[in-house]
Length: 154
Length: 154
DNA sequence: TCTGAAACGCACTGCCC
DNA sequence: GGGCAGTGCGTTTCAGA
Image (tube, rainbow over all chains, first blue to last red; front, side, top):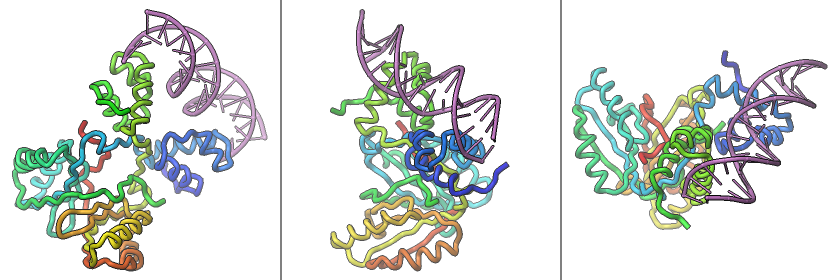
């Protein structure tokens, strides 16, 4: 039973998508409320699916993933079976952090993290190119990450 | 003092980037260790910057952000001042979830979440276009999000 | 739906090996 | 660097309004 969110719910979501370690007590304090209602609202937001999960955000550079590539893929054949299969194969590649099916000339848009350009070369040659049905494949490299957040403007 | 990570550290990071609500006790249990060393390792990973932050991941659709656009921007002038200013202005736009400075013909790559195509139209017209120095601006829309994770393959 | 209080478990500290 | 025990705090539950 999913109902509309009020301002209190939105404030809770705003706080937690910035810092999920904030305690119920702290959130209650900023909202001038007691712990119980905040606690129940958070549980409701989790159960209703507004909060999907809680994750630790790691440092790409320190983990030695300095190379980020944007990869544009166009398929050769566009019937349902081929698209589904491509999507399924992409899911299983841990190097691929994001993949979107696009409207327009380019079919898929991929964001890929690698340890080196050599690794990227191997990745394209051994993994991506082995996915049959890829027609055109264009790669672009990120010089600098200006902004990267999981937050939504709520 | 940042030292190299061993397998235990990497396992901890793997677990926490999937689910940061896992307790120290649970992590210790899967690693057949006691709580203390796991606790200390997590603190070290936080202090050394391997773990940047903990966040709640929200549901875009439930929050009524069904439109995701990829926006490619080329600047008119490419001297340092103009680029810095552009980057600074982008930082302040909450609709922009990701922005990368690219190598190649396209200067910047933006990922933008909106409530509707009308809102996107307004966003481009009122906010992006008002940033002086934008030369070319191309928009592509996401039909379907195949994969979107903050995890790294560690 | 909020308040307040009580119970539980985990985070955190200090000491030992 | 890892194990063990104690304390405080946050989470969780529940009676009442």
